[in-house]
Image (cartoon, rainbow, N blue to C red; front, side, top):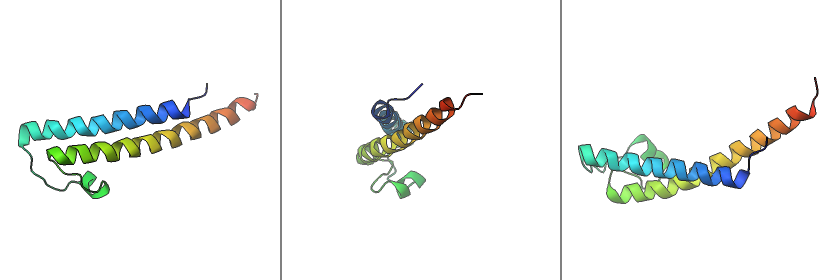
Length: 88
């Protein structure tokens, strides 16, 4: 079975992007907007626990998730293709 690289990349980007977005708003709802730089904020330029930071994190995570998903799907297709060519 092969994965559709574009579809997997889009899905991974959306899941990671909206997951980070919702997590940020969850933290804002319970602890308030602190504006503190987090570990993710060190990786994603401009991200912080704030309303503006949640949108910046959403954009970074969409890109990051899409690239990671595309690489994963491409490697999966590469490995599964070579494994299916060998018969036992």
